[in-house]
Length: 214
Figure 1 (cartoon, rainbow, N blue to C red):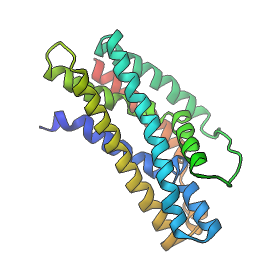
Figure 2 (tube, rainbow, N blue to C red):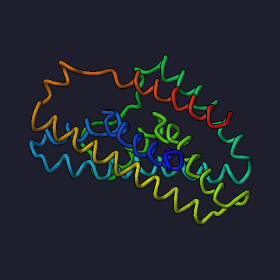
Figure 3 (cartoon, rainbow, N blue to C red):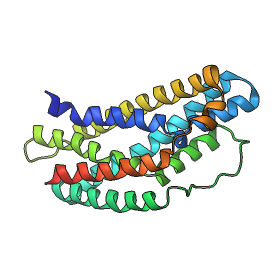
C-alpha cells in the first residue's frame, strides 16, 4: 500500500519543502506585507506566487508525458537523474547566484511571472520529475504495457494540484508566523542557508531517479 502512495507522498513532501524555501515566494510576500503594513497583502500576494509555481510544475508534468511518448520509462528516469545531478552540482557551487528582479513595486501579473521564473530557474520543476515519473509509471503498470493518456494526464493534474496545495499551505503558514509572531529579527538571527539545502535536495532527487531506473 505504501509503494503506490510513494510518488504522491513525494509530491506532497516536495510541496511542503518548496513552500518553506524563502526563495520560492513567502519572503517576497512578507516583504510586501511589511512595506504596506497590511497582513492582507501577504495572503493576496501568495495566490499569484502559488499559481506561477504551479505553472512551472505543470510544465515539468507535460515534459514527462511528452518524454514517455518517445523514450522508455527507464531511459527517462536515467536522463532525469543525469540532468538533476549536473544541475545539482551547478547549484552547489553557485548557490549564491539568483535571478535579478526589477524591484518591489509589483502587481499580480508580475508576481505570477516572478514565481514561474524563480521556480524554473532554481529547478523546482526539475526536482519533482522523479515523483511525476513515479505517478506516470503507476498508470503504465495499471495499463500493462500500454498508455492510458487520459488517466496519466488526470493523475499529473492531481499531482500538480497536491504539490501546489501543500506548497501554498506551508508558504502561508511560514509567512504568517514570521509576520505575527517573530518579525524580521528572526531572519537576521536564525537565517538558514536554504540555497545549499536546495542544491542538496536536487542531488538527492538525482539519486532517487537513478535508484528508480536501476
